[in-house]
Amino acid sequence: MAASARKPRFVLKLGGELLEQPDDLARIAREIAALAQRTSLVVVHGGGREIDAALATAGIPKQQVDGLRVTDAQTLDVVVAVLAGGINTRLVAALRKAGARPVGLTGADAAVATMKRSQPMASVAGPKVDLGLVGSPINNGSPQLLTDLLARGYVPVVACIGATRDGQLLNVNADTLAAHLASSLAAKRLVIAGGTSGVLDEAGRTIERLDSRRAARMIKAGTANKGMVAKLEACRSALRSGVGDVLIANGRQVRLDMLAAAKGPVAGCTQVVR
Image (cartoon, rainbow, N blue to C red; front, side, top):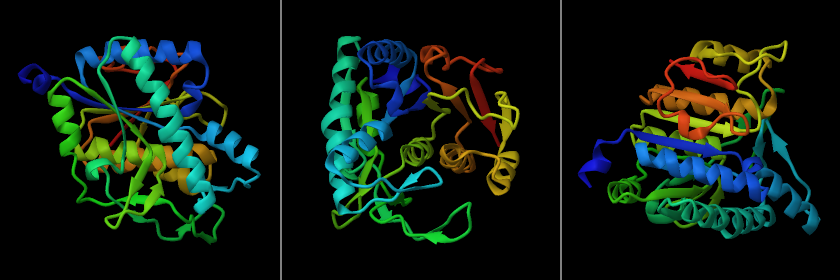
């Protein structure tokens, strides 16, 4: 317990695109297992493309605004089945094989991330949009389950599903959930790993270092693409709450276990700071 308490806390968000192929999943699991040797690590995962495929199979239309999924009751059933019933279990099994001690969870477990239903949001395009059964974290959720697991050397693996106090399940953007957990755990670093090489400038080059003010300007000006808006908002939220920094990384090009010690620019990454 004492050894775990001395390790720095990290939160790692994995985009679902990194977990679709068996070889990628096995490699990611090995890197996470190595990272967990040096940090107290919480993993949060999404699964957008697998959700899209399941919705298409079920004949349910996909709707998104600024990278956030519009979620009705039918869509929520698919989201829960894919994330909690499929991806989370596969990732936990791969981590166990790699030598880690994973525990599969959702944000609904033990009030890990208590939610409220999101209010209609102003989109980059202008008009307000009701996202439906989508949650926003509230500040009085309890990270106690996570801290207990971390103290005992486990790796919590959290699917991006939450619940209100009265038990209504809600879809939660994985970047948003990861930022919230990083804040509530006072994490040293949040890593958002996906399939893109950090934040790109207008010429398509990776921005090595980005501060919150420039991120806000990019969102307002519309120079951040739709999928990146939610990531940048998550970065700003985490940094406001005291998280040390955020790395947005290409999980196919960067070894995740090397990011614990990274201090300067890393190829394929954007470091976001206050």
